[in-house]
Length: 247
Length: 340
Image (cartoon, rainbow over all chains, first blue to last red):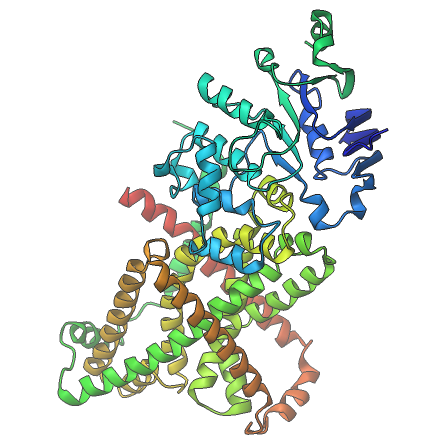
């Protein structure tokens, strides 16, 4: 049996008085492309925050590479990258500086300092930004001065530049037009063999979605409601009644 | 007739009520004994003394003032940023340090902030005598604490979600910390830090009244001899210095500077920090300190610390603070409405 990359065992998370996650168990294996479905408030964002270690569960265990999250070192933890629903970019920095922030896990303090002074190399950041369809004129613009769709792609480029093994994305196609949505989705779901870009894309992906027309390309679908996983199945086995359960 | 409603806007005007007792005090104590002197003082403002000798003295004194003010400003900004970061919660969150250290540091900073630079100057003067270094250190001590408070408050405003997102990248802690605090520190430096130079110039002038050198000493001497024309030459000089420094600093914009200049700027900032630190260490440990003669008197008077007089003094200080605070916080909104 192949060891899972990421594993949740009976995880519960209580926010004030309510359980936002209730005894959730999940195993994510290498190479899986998972779509996470559910209404707003179903617990998708909480699940992603627990998977990337931002939130600590009240009960249960989270394991990455078969090791409990608290026992991982920084290098191991950096194998997970996240695209947040609210992007969480640093508003006072430029687009390229924000993308370069994604390299903090692999670079020294001097790099971080030079990045803030705007004197570091941006070659790699530009490469990732171009793949995310960001125009050159946007590269040096301050985040405050660019549109929502551009910010969205900057956030995607920042998570891709981390060259992680697992990508967790919380509604990453917000603010994108249909063509960009298709391009970015193809980029995030590309498999190792088919990747013709010069960049590394995470092999394992979990994306939370609201739009059912974007399910092509995923091989596993997880449905959530009221903090619980209602179904977890292969894409080919997804039926309408499954969706009726969660919406 | 509309009723006066108490809400957040109207409450801001309430402190203006302090003007009533102050106006009453001014009214009952009014006399015209010094009207001639006052007239001479006002006329001298339009007719300051200008000759080679006084211009030479003015330039020399302004030089001294600028020297003391600039160094104390620079040192207080650098250490203000350092202590600001050290006294902000984000520092302890990222480095996983116990939060009681923050509380201890805040207490220490509050203590040194509560003593005015003049008092620090007088205390240090008793120990080390009068020189420029004392002026710089006397200004630096409370300024570092004030700057630290402002920088820390701005750093605390960083969005928790932004902190989480940068932490999630899993870089080394120092990289995460600097990436998060950089923008608020630079922004505060631009908005508040540059203004502090103006404050430092004024503080230097005030310390000069106690003989620390700079333009303040000349102002004090002119005032003592009632030489108002000379006094106004110095006052205009001081105003000119503040205006020029303000204009120069407004033009100095970090975001528009070239990469090369920025590199040199950071290197020089680092060297100055290092120099300042060694200066402080040298100052504290050098052996040229004048014995603290007043220490015995202080110990003797210690007996009366909790007497009625002491409490009365304390109460008077609090009342004066409340009155002056009332005026300073209630007038700006009125001027704001007026000018709008």
